[in-house]
Amino acid sequence: MKKVISYTIGWDTKGKRGYLTAIDENNESHAFGQLSKEEFRILFDLLKENKVYIDNNHWFISGWDQKQVTP
Image (tube, rainbow, N blue to C red):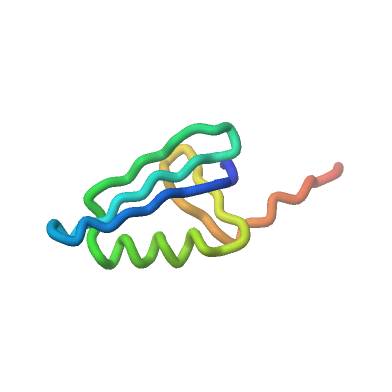
């Protein structure tokens, strides 16, 4: 899981679709296009959280605390 460090969002006013690109801590880009109003709103709200991560299956996760576990 990688921390999302920045994102760009856009809304196509004619086509009524959202677009999102998230950049993770490894500077990799994750693009999502043609999002419905509902998807766009959920992702926009989620990305406003303090810590947001993205995993290899393109799940955005918030509220995760990656603390070091010492044996």
